[in-house]
Length: 278
Image 1 (tube, rainbow, N blue to C red):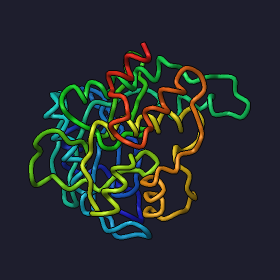
Image 2 (image 1 turned 180 degrees about the vertical axis):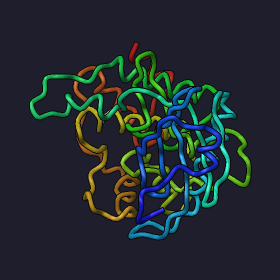
Image 3 (image 1 turned 30 degrees about the horizontal axis):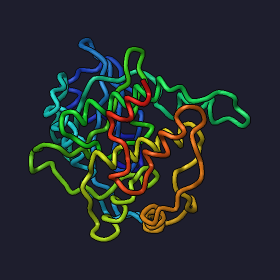
Image 4 (image 1 turned 90 degrees about the horizontal axis):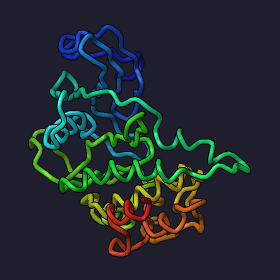
């Protein structure tokens, strides 16, 4: 896939007969298109294996992630979703979610000397989207600001390829090896450091949501480590609980601080977070 702009695989061109399609993302074994056709508006994901890079092991799971996400979406009852295989990996398509993500929406809050506080209603929309997933017995496993799309009518939680909570086809499954360290709970970081794998939990999702709200509102990570530090060093900092003394301004401050508690049992549940914001 490297070296030249990717093309929409033939199997997807045949399935969707697009009238227009736009390349959105092409990185780390994943390509995402926005596709329009006479039937609707879709997000299309195509996965392929990536070679080992600095501080990254070779990751054949990236080729499986789109189909795994498609299977998860089916298990959760989402309609107008399909998934399958192509020559280098797997794919899925799902309804396109319109709107800015959380980080982009709260950009004015992060400007120097800004007097704009993060809106609790936006945070509540994110909480409600995650609460729907937790109510079905699932953990997302990859909560980050880019995965909350603030739509005109509701907030959508996207990118469920790493979610755990039900059976998915064995041929598309793979172990959970952590997520973006900025949003990784200490217990997840410790497990990945010790064994190379971890088990996503709803409590870890709460931590990740708190870290997402914090960085979106302030621009600061929850844990301090050098920007260019290897992932193992980043995870050690998270596992050791080296939290920055940074709070979200306004009414979210104490709540986010509780969500970022080092011990999972000290964090509020998603329902308690929602109640505090209402």
